[in-house]
Structures are given as C-alpha cells and as structure tokens.
Length: 525
Image 1 (tube, rainbow, N blue to C red):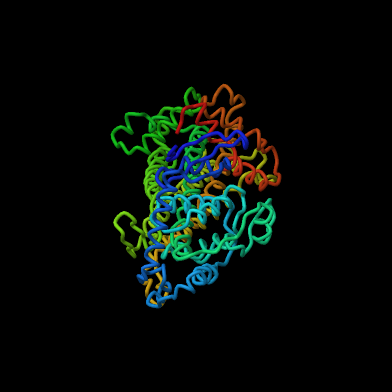
Image 2: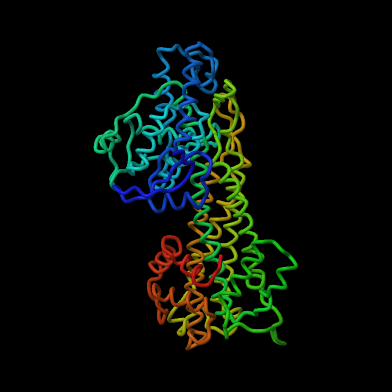
C-alpha cells in the first residue's frame, strides 16, 4: 500500500501514526503531530525515492566523479578533493566541527518540529541520504529523544548548519539529549531504546544539516501561537469595548464591506458575534460621536495582522515541503546540481513581517489597557480601576508592565533580514539572518500573550466596576470570556500581589483550550 500522507491506528501501540512523504505537511498537521505527540513513519512511495537517490550517489562515487559535498570539502574547501577512504571521516568531521552553537537550548517542541521538517524534506528523495539513516532520525523523534540544540549560531545560509549539526550529533552517539525529562549523554538514551549509533557515508552529513529547518520550525511554532493570539486580541477588544461602554457602529458589517481586506472583515465579525446582546455598548450621541482609534479601528489593526499571518502561513507551508539542502540529486535525469535552496531569505522576510505584525497586537492592546485605567479616558470608571485609590494602586502598575513589554517588542521587531555578515571566507557572502528573525518572532509572540493577558484582567475589572449584573449586561460571548477569566483571577477589591495572576492568565491563553472553547461556542475564527 503506497501511502502518501495519512493517519492510521496501530492497535499494539494505540497511537496515531503519520506517514510522511515530503509533500503534504501544513501548519495544522504540524500542530497535531507536535502538540499531540504523534509518531511518524516514511511512506512507501517516499522510501522508493530515497533509495533511488542513494543509489545515484553511490554510482557517482564509484565512477570517480568529483562532486561538491560527496567527495570534496565544504564551503571555501570545496576545491579540496577527498579520497574514498576518508569520506566517512569527512562526514563525522562535518557534524562535529559544525556543532558550534551557543546560548540557551531551544524548546523541546521546536526541536521536534525541526526533526519532523527535516525528515519531510529528505523524504522527497533529492538528497542522497540512506533510508536507514533517516529511519534513525525518526527513532529519535518517536522515542522523544530530544537533542540539545543551542539557539545561537545560524546565519540563515547555508541553511541552519550549526543547529542542525547539534540535531544530528545523537545519531552518532555524541552530544547530549533530553530524555525522560532529564539531560543525559546521547549514548545512554540510545542504549535504553536499543538504538545503534550510525556511521554517516558520502553526502549524508551535508544532507542532514544543509537546510532551513530551525528557521521554519521556529516560525511554524510561532504561527501556531499567533493564530491563537489574533483571536485572543479580538476577544480582549470585545471585552474592553464593553468595559468602556464603546460605540458599536464602527463594527457594522456595511462599513467593512467597503474595504474588503479579509482579516478586517473577519475581526469585525468576531466582535459582533462576541458582543451580541450586549447592553453596555452604545450608539453615538451628542456627547460622544466616536471612540478613539484603539476601539473603532480595532478590526482594521487586528485585520492587518491577520492578513500578514495568512501570508506567513503560505511561505512556511511551501518551505516545509521543499528540498533545501545542497547539492541536489536528480536521479531520473542522472545529474547533480549545486544550488542555493538552503538560503533562508523567504523565511527571514516573512518572520520579520509577522514579528512586526504581531507586535502591533501588543501595541494596540497596551493602549486599550491604558484607557481602561485612566479616569479621564475610561468613561466614568475609577482611576486605575480601584475603589479606594491612594491607599490602593489597583491596576496602575500592570499598565507599566505592558508598556515595558511593548517597548521591548519594538526592538525585537527591528528586521534582522536587512543585515548580512559574510562567512566562509566570503564564499557565503550574503546570508539571511533568518534564524534571528524567527527567534525574535517567537519572543514577540510570548510577549504579546502577556500584554493581552493584562488587558483581559483589566477589562474584567472594568466590567465589575461598570455593572452589578454581568450576566444581564454583557454580550453572549463576552460573558463567557468574563466567566473564564474569573475562574482564574478574582475581582481586585484591594491591592494584592499581581504577577502570579498575569502569568496564570498568559498560560491560559497559550497552553489551554481557552481560545478554542470560545471559537467553538461562538463561531469565531
């Protein structure tokens, strides 16, 4: 049976097994595999292509042809021919010398995503790797043997050489891994799972490390987080709008039809659904004919981020099903081409673009929080949302926290893709810095989750000060949101330590079904 990409149930293990063929991965499948801890296997069709590609490599080596990466040095050493008896040592030297990363270790989910995406790229059958080698990499994945990969070192071309080398070290029985929640020597984890270390042969080392999988893994996980954040931002806007007794007309469907950006239309529709039945929203009147931009332009601001997220998803999904190593083995045409598919420019630009876009969710969220706590702007509520101001500071200082994080995001959102420092004695004279773009995006997503958490806490406090009967006055969706918040954070009657509540609600936004529950109950997206 030639499975391309499907799921089947394995009775003896009672788990879902994903068959990988290099063609059909997407963000949704990555999220399912990584966050539900699914296992993977190469499809039969992909196995045939991998074997054929390897046979081509071995035939070329036997014929004595000099081909970059098969029997030459690397980078500036590409002019150095390597004798057949040194090729295995060449591959091991490549991995060891390139495992030169530093900094904090990448999150386990990012590392597993790197492995998944590298397996998918190699499964296409243009890389010349042995099937057995790829199956060993899958064994690491399926047994949760997580290579320790430092986050710093990649310049985004030739791909993510350094972090991918750290990923490969355990296959050789070298380096350290996280296994059963402990950091151990690779050999120990391999031995416990009865996995034999391997010897890499010609082209295999380069096939494993010359790719964009760190960049694409971090951007993929960031996209998964951003998908939840954009909905959380709409949810926060809806609750804040009611806390401030905002004007509902700017969210009218007819307004947004006249500027039909998909994201804008989507956000406006979400606000209408969440606030349906609200008694707190107002029509314009003689005293107040319009709200400030952070309220009435919310769909336009959030919507632009939605549209940039859609763009990033297209780039990443295209990348995760691409071949990004070098040289490429075209078995059917009997040719090998040294190209540049490892260059991370598409990911660098899309990560920078998305980072700027997600940071804007934080910018506007903090401004809404500032309105909520300021009695000159919050339509009659107490200063800093506290009943006994002076003795109590209320939510004065949580807005400081939001402001500081917003400022940090402004630095992180500065595009790394505009920078390039030549490497390998100017052989690699333009690099993408895409790994830095992706890492900054990841941090921005984490920061924005904290900013939105603070807005939600502040908005819930505003609701309690605004009405004695939230169940009567709130919209159908915002009441559900309010009650979810109150499950985790109590009304602030007098000053107390607030940081645990911010952390708790931030984790609710990112690590639970908070967003999914609201999506499913109120048909928002």
